[in-house]
Structures are given as structure tokens and as C-alpha cells.
Length: 223
Ligand code: GAR
Image: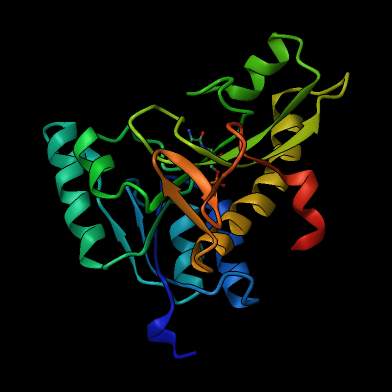
């Protein structure tokens, strides 16, 4: 297949970009049959931008501090993202709340990953909150982006045990390992045309997935 026919992917980041790296690796290994056409960060000088540059992917910084309000930042961001004609927009540690206008523009072609078993713990400090609550499992969820913060129809989730001596950092490390497996897998499915948002549900081959997403433990074998 010619490169230009591959689904076009734009990745939005704010920081270290380890999820971005998992996409870069999956594209290189053809696990994801798509092309990352741009990486955009709202923060300058972050490691994720270096990762993209090293992989030869065009980068751009749109610094939210240069804008008077959320609406004008999102309008500028939307214009740049749309200029890349994306089939898929991936939020990968993009730590900005998006306006309804932005979300609507990219609805059905925008995903996010969140480091919790949604709907538990949207927002920040997920691992500390899971520890404070005395939970025995934690995890990560990939979902289509809707108006809900860290919500929206779930695609896939992975669970990890919380161990007795865990702190937020050790738990985050264990969850990251799973993030780097499930997010590329969801992207692979989307690029293959197997996964879509239909009537506000994440669907595989047109059939709705469970409300909390496909359990990764059950799909590991078919990767
Ligand atoms: C990841 O843990 C991701 O799940 C989380 O930010 C981290 C980014 O890491 N996202 C959210 O909390 C979204 N609300 P990365 O920059 O190394 O991919």
C-alpha cells in the first residue's frame, strides 16, 4: 500500500510522550497501518517533541499561554489539526480541557487514554486516588472523546493489581506498561476500519463494545 493511502494520524501531547513513542514504534513495526503526519504540543521543549523529531515526524508548538482564552486557543489548534486532514486525532497525555466546539469538530475520530479504570477517577492524580481509596486494582482506559472530561465511549481497558507496597510512582509505572499496549491496539483497530463510534457507542465491526470497553486480557491473544 502506498504511504499516502494510509490513515492520517495527528497526535496531541503536553509532556513526555511515552504513549506517542508507543505509536511511533507500532507504526514502524506496521502494527498500526497508519501515518503519523504531525505531533502538536501545547508546551514547548517537552520530551515528546524530541521523540517525534527523532522519528522524522513534523512537530508544532501551539502554546496555550499565548491565547487570551480557551476558545481562541482551541480555535487555533483546530485549524492546525484540520490542516493535516487527519483521519484520527490522538490525545496522548494532552493535558488541556477541550471546548465543545473542538470536540464536536473531531467527534468519532478522536481518542484519549486515561490512567484509570473509567468511569473511576477522571481528572488528575488518578493513582494516588486509587491508593487512598484502598482499591485492589487500577488500570487504564482508551475512549472516544466526547464532552465528558476523561469520559466518552470506552474502547479498551487494561487492569493491573495494586500491590501492598505501591506508591503512586510504582503504580503509574505498572499502568504505563499497559497504556503502551492498549492504546496502539485501539489505533490499529481504528486504522483497520474495525472500530468506530456509532450512536455514541464504541463499536467493533458495527457491534457495541461493553460500556467499560473491551477487556485487554481477553484480546491479548489475537494481537
Ligand atoms: C499518561 O499516563 C496518560 O494516560 C495521562 O497522561 C500520561 C501521559 O504520559 N493522561 C491523562 O491523565 C489524561 N487525562 P505520556 O506523555 O508519557 O504519554
